Structure formats: structure tokens, C-alpha cells
Image (tube, rainbow, N blue to C red; front, side, top):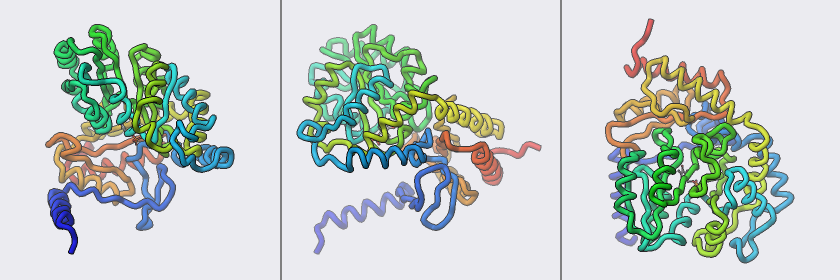
Length: 400
Ligand SMILES: *Cc1c(COP(=O)(O)O)cnc(C)c1O
């Protein structure tokens, strides 16, 4: 006889399925990239990876990974402070800090861990954490691990943020927390206004730039660069190596040297979890060197984004955001969004429909993510598929 938890969970699973919220995993049988082979044999164009710069399987990155494997080995089998720190980890931390114009940085196994470990060491019951309502789950969890006072401001609403800062004026320390780019809408945090309020109310600012580091801003330094705020003294930046920067895994916190030094002493996911694989550390290091030499990849991504957004707008689709490679195509209806995504897959275009609870009710959409490795042919093929399916499903009207 199985424990009664088992049937209880089976029933929960049935309810998830019945509600149409079950997340099935599509199996890929090739490298990650813009052209992928699915396990059922179909080859499709991928428009839903976080592989913004096309580095996940770039030949140069694979070569760097082979070299890192040979030079540094596979694993460390240790946390950093026992015997898990190689010179490649220190070099990568320095490269990240230099790239982001901060004093220092600290590596984690993932951005989820970076966000899980960046609050609790600094903030206690005397302090106030003021968070955007649409912040990533990992920031929310990291904040939950503290005993700090918590305030949530309406998404990107600076009047509401000012009110929360006012309410928190008695706290010892205040910190404003935001995603740099919000993944469902492809919109930016209003960083200049946030920094201005932070200065007015003597607050720190933590920006999770996971959907920005490597490609947002003229040289890919992220949202602070886009807004002319690189090196702002109140900024702490968290981010991932699991998206634009090769897409393997790993995360980091970058900021003022004493804060980073203190995280090495007190941050639990850093102290009690294994050191990042040297293969990833060495490969990420070579990626940061590459991105510091040339803006070629982020420039191509920017051009692809402009072309694709213009193409969709001309076809009559309603899209959100203005220049980020996350392109949300609004369909509003959950069933329609799923049918649209299925029909696109039949046309060889792999995208995903998002609906409640991932986005608000009545705001179902398809989210396209562009990549530097998409060619003009890839983009044209996707635009034709959107046009064909959009007409068939009555989302856009034919224009003759
Ligand atoms: C993807 C993402 C994360 C998680 O990154 P991992 O390195 O995969 O853990 C954290 N924050 C934001 C904003 C993200 O988009």
C-alpha cells in the first residue's frame, strides 16, 4: 500500500491537467540552437530560447569548453571555501565585475541561488525591502528568507514606489528590488527614476539583469548601460550565465567590494553548495572576453529584433514592449494562444503560448524570443507563418 500522499498528489496532477495548465516537455534531440531537431524527427526553427546571442552551441564556445575541460578538469567536489576555488573562478569573477563596472562579483550555481542568497545576509527586521510586483520568483523567494519588512509596489509605478519608500522611512536600511527586464512583457524597469528615488530616500537598488546582461545597452552591459547608469554606487546587479552568456548555468551578484566580501562569509547558497564547474567557469570567462572585444553579436540581435518587430506590426499583430528581443504577441484568449502555437509548430516554428497564471487573465499571448543566430531567412519564414496562421485563426485580417 502506498502512502496516502501518493493518491492525494495524483488528484492534484489530474486537476492541473483538467485546468489545461499541465506543462508538457517537448524533447529536443539536437544541440540547442535556432534550428533544432525534435525527438519525433521534425526539424523546426526555435523562437523560444533565452539563447539571445546564439552562444549555447556556438562552435567557438564548444571549443572554449573543450579547452576549459582539459585545462581545469570537470568538477570541484567542494564548496568554494574548502577546496573549490581555482584561478579560473577568480578570473571569471573579475571579468564579470569589469564588464559590469562594479568592484567585484561572486559566483553561484544559478541566478536562482544568487537571488536566494543576496538578501538574508544584509537585511533583518529593522530593514525594508521594496519590490516590484512582477519580480522574478527567485527574488520573491530570496526576500522571503529574510525577516525584513516587505513592501510591494505596483509594476514600474514610480508614484507607488515613492509611497512605499515613505512608509519605509523608519527602517534602518531600504533596498529597492527589480528585474532589469521583465520576461513576460519584454519591458524595462524605469531605472533612472528608480535610482533618483533611491537617492532621495537613501536606498540601495538590486537589479536582476538576467534578461539583459550581454546584449542590452550599446556594448551589452545591461539595463544600467542602456540608461547611462553604469557604475552607479547604489547598484547591486544579479544575473545568470544561463541565458545570453552561453546558456549552461551559473549566476552571480556584482557590486561594492565589502558587500561581495560579506556574501562570501554569510550567503548560504554560496557557502553550502558546490562550486561552479570549471568547464562553465572557463567557458564563461572566454565569452566575457569575446563580448568585451566586439559588439557584433548584440548588434545582430538588435537588428533582428528591429526587423521582426516591424514585420509583425506591419502584419497587424499587437505586440508589447519596444526594442527587447522578447516579443509578446497579444492574443488575449488562452485557448487561441495554444492553438496558435500548435499551428505555428506545424509550420516549423517553435514558440510557446503563455496564459494565466503565468500572465494575467485575459492577457494570453505568444512570446517570441529572438537570437543573434537567426538569419534573415529564418525571420522571414517565421513572419510568413505568423501571417498564414494569423489569417486562418482570424487574428489579423488579410490586406489586399
Ligand atoms: C531566468 C531568470 C532567473 C533564474 O536564472 P537561473 O540562472 O536559471 O537560475 C532569475 N531571475 C530572472 C529575472 C530570470 O529571468
